Length: 357
Ligand code: GLY
Image (cartoon, rainbow, N blue to C red):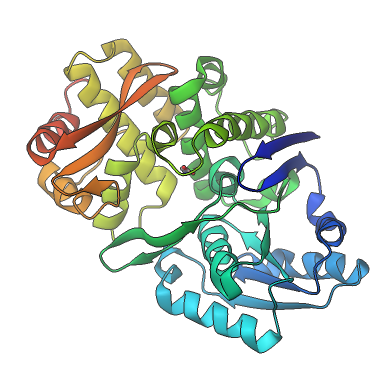
């Protein structure tokens, strides 16, 4: 078991263990809420909602729920409005505890509902996808999408606890397990060469190394969030591969999942950085080959123009400029702000196969 303490605008613990899902009620008790409200999706609720409600009942909590259709296409203002309406109908108050039971979409939706309902109630994140375990459940980013772009409406709102249950990952469909590996690779590239080396031997769902690997990613994220909770600078490094990755997600109409899109985004950015002489060509090739070994894409079928146009809707844009994360080596990245002409050239360099296999 690992306990990672996060000290931010709200202090909380991230617990990485086997079966903390059955302790949701006990953790909610320590928060002394008046009731619990579980937000989940159509994939996860049939598997785990009963266990969470049993745990809450054992701790004496009345619990209501809102379950929405799984997938990024549900991460809309409409679904968010339905969630808030369900909370109001269930009698949720500012003293209640929202439980986010699911992957990244559920965590974002439930977290944003908790951040805004009655100006904020507490939220326990119970991530069920590898991607949510290593990244989105920690750090307090919550949001929904607009037709104009991903995560355009949201809030920084730290959870009150994060319960990461490694046993839930054993039943993840392969595509979604692999999807989370992309964010682990990201942590290796931005901050920890040893973590990246570990992935030369790809992780598998029942892998003994899973708990320690997740805990390491959470520690890296914790260290960054504690220094820059509201993404004034350092936290932007967590977006390595995400500008092009979000463009790929958007261009695919979200048929390509976040981690797969970010994987291609990282490979393309590494390629562009090598071409600009910012990092060694061998480092860019290594990123691509580890992605490929883990079953992730290291290229995209969308052309540079398509990705450039999709990236213009990214929230990392400001005025005539956009923030990007450049790779300087394994474990070393830096942020930069580019005008559109320079960014267009970068995307061209990224997409021109060149160094990629
Ligand atoms: N997923 C990037 C961040 O939380 O900042």
